[in-house]
Image 1 (cartoon, rainbow, N blue to C red):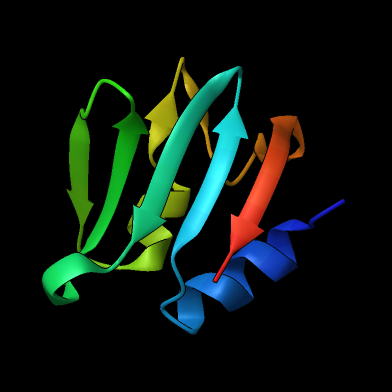
Image 2 (cartoon, rainbow, N blue to C red; image 1 turned 45 degrees about the horizontal axis):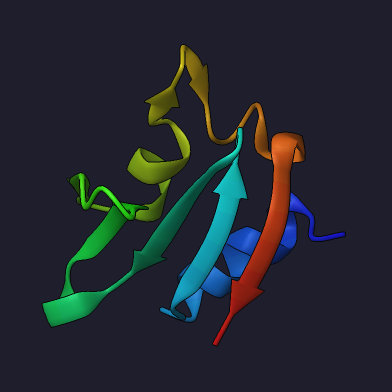
Length: 77
């Protein structure tokens, strides 16, 4: 199981990340040099200035940082 520390390391390496969080799939990455999280398949996109902003982003009232343990799938490349 991936940890929050692992996730942060992947963000720091600017990897393309796919997660399932609360039964919703997300792509997280740096297309065009900007950090984004895209809900798939809906395509809802949120842009962030840095990884801390992403980690503090609330999904269903919880920050990704505080509820990362709810991630059920993870891949990074």
